[in-house]
Structures are given as C-alpha cells and as structure tokens.
Amino acid sequence: MKAEDIKKIAVIGAGDMGHGIAEVALLAGYKVAMQDIEQKFVDRGLTRIKESLDKLVEKQKVTAENREAMLGNIETFTDVAECASDADLAIEAVPEIMDLKKKVFQTLDGAAPGHAILASNTSNMSITDIALATRRPEQVVGMHFFNPAVLMKLVEVIKGDKTGEATMQTTYDLALKMNKVPVRIEKDSIGFAYNRVNAPTQVLLSLMVERGHVTPEQIDARMRKIGMPMGPYELMDYVGLDVAYHGARYFSERLSRDYEPPGWLKAKIDAGELGKKTGRGIFDWSKGRPEIDLSKAKEDFDPAVLIAVQVNEATKLLEEGVVNSADEIDKAMASGGGSGVGPFQMARGIGYDKLAAICENLAHEFGVKVFEPTATLKKGKI
Ligand code: 3HC
Image (cartoon, rainbow, N blue to C red; front, side, top):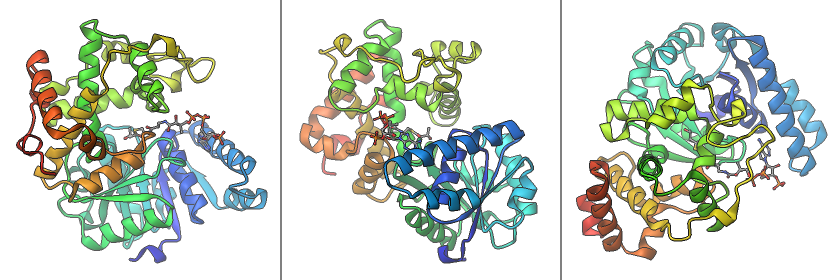
C-alpha cells in the first residue's frame, strides 16, 4: 500500500498524544476514527481537538468552514475492533505498558483490514516485541509523534526487526503528507533517537537535584533565560511524570541501571502528582502554566554539561547504526522539541574535545557509566 491509498486512520487512545495525532490526521484531510476505553475520555479528546482547532481558526491557519469539515470527518468509539474495522492505518497511543500495547495490537490485527499498517506511537518500547502480538509483523511500524503533536514537527519512523521496507516508506510518506518532519530509525533500539539522546540529561539533572546542587526552578529559569521555551522540569510535567517514570524504568531494565527512576519521581507517581494533567507535579499547574521566576536562574550552571551528555549519547546511536547520520540526529532533535537546534550543531561550536572531557569528569564525579565518553566522541571527527 502507498501513502496515497490511505484514506482512513484509526487512532487508539484519545489522551494527550492520541487526540493530538487525530487532529494532525484531520488537518491533513484524512477521515479519522478515534477510540478510548470510556466515553468520557473520548469526549475529552474531542473537546481538546475542537479547542485546538479554534486556536488555529483564530490565527487564520484554518477557516471556520474547514474546521466544520474536519469535525465531520471524525468518528469516535469505545471499542478498538469497531474503531479499526475499515481503517487503512491504525496508530496506537495507549499508556506505555507493554502488555496493554500487545493486547491492543492483537485486537487491531484481528479487526483491521489485511492491507492496513499497524503503527505504535510508543516513546521507547520495542516495535519488534509489539509486532509479536500480530500475524503481520512486516506491517507493524513505529510512528512516534511529539507533544504537542499539532505543533511539534518530528515523527520518528521506526523499523522493527520484521518491518517491511514498503511499510517504512509508506509511513514516512504519510508523515510528510501530515506536514511533519520524518526521521528514519533504522534499528529498533530503546528510546529511538529523540528520547534516547535526552535520557542522560534526566539522569544528570536528577542527580544534581538529589545532591542539593540545584533546584528544578533554578535550572528551568536558567534554561528559559538562554532561549528554551520550557525548562527540562516544566517539560517533564507537561509531558507527564508517569511518562517519564515508565520511560526511566524501561531504560533501566533494558539499557542500563543508571536510568533507574529517582526516588522523588516514584514519590510523585505514588502521590498521583503527574504534572499538567493532574494540576500538580514538580510545579503547580492548577492555574495554568507555572510561573518560573527567572531571577532564580542558577547563572553558574553551564548548559554545556547537558550538551555533552546528549552528544555523547547521540554518538552511541551512530556507533549502533540506529540512525544513519549525525545530520539526521540533528534533524530529529531540532524538530522534536522547542530548541530548534541539534546536538552535533552545538557540539561543533563548543569542540568535541571539551565535551569529551566534560563527560569524563561527570562519569567520575557521579559514578555513572552512561556518561563515559564514547570512542567516537573522543575521536571527534563526526
Ligand atoms: N493547538 C494549537 N495551537 C497551540 C496549541 C495547540 N494544542 N498549544 C499551543 N498552541 C499555540 C498557542 O496558541 C500559541 O500561539 P501564538 O503564539 O500564536 O499565541 C503558541 O502555540 C505558543 O503557545 P503558548 O503561548 O501557550 O506557550 P509557549 O509559547 O510556551 O508554547 C509550546 C507552548 C509549543 C508547548 C512550547 O512551550 C514548546 O515548544 N515546548 C517544548 C515542547 C517539547 O519539547 N515537546 C517535546 C516533548 S518530548 C515528547 O513529546 C516525546 C514523548 O515520547 C514523551
């Protein structure tokens, strides 16, 4: 099947990501079927799509007629099988729990037409493992959007061990039709590109907070002052501390124990403080976006430490053949978040030797193997 043959897209899950992906598909002119387990979740997803479309109408990016036409193109369901029964492509966006994803894929495989591609929006998890739940692993692929899906440009297109080239190409072309920036992930690897490159920064920031070197507000204020639209802690709240926690556990089980979720994060999960979605996380969201006091910025915090661990992790993706080039990694990192610039671009300005030395020091100071500089970073010819 080619991307031109896709007419109807099913989205499983109407939460933060699911409703956003459904909206992206509507904006690109597709018919959409959106499902969640209870009517109230489906209704909430639909309301959020309407609110977002209203913003786009306000900004004259979408006409009022177009908005109505799009809302006429979406159907909602509480049953996965019904939702996918005549879809050409289904995108799963349910919580990051492997057994749950497998159950959804098994149902999709039984219900969706034989030609349909089954895609997962998982942030970190193995596409190969998810595909095992189906009898069409060559048509199972990762299609990873970024939050908020309507604004963030990146879509990682992830090849599981059995994903066919035709499936990869169709999914890549579909992302282009959705006005996104697709990046091919050639090898099924934990966290793919964007989340993998960012993962060591979470480890470092958590260690710095735990040891009392900094507070989340001091870091966020500093990063905002140098141009980031959101500091790393506010972003964690925005995406959801549950997502961060499940991600860290998965990284810890599959990649390195260095990624074990910190105690404070587990405490937040146990207290039901998941960030924006519950009104409280690291910050208070009860009155909307938290006010970060920029005067609290820790001016002697050098953001080069974050760039160092990012670029070091990015070199591992090159060494492991997960992404084909440094430029593709930069494209992913510049399009997935709000920074607009990739780690290799920044590294060239700072110097690979300086960044390798920073990684060496961090690995020693914190006793964290993940920070140790790779041979590629030390060589520096990237
Ligand atoms: N629909 C339509 N428009 C929206 C919108 C939505 N859902 N959300 C925000 N906007 C618009 C606003 O109306 C506003 O428009 P204007 O500039 O014309 O007034 C504009 O976007 C900016 O929004 P805000 O003024 O509310 O706030 P910001 O300027 O801070 O922008 C943000 C919000 C776009 C989220 C920005 O803070 C940002 O880029 N943050 C970083 C996001 C990021 O890094 N995402 C990646 C997370 S990692 C991930 O998703 C991976 C996963 O696997 C976990």
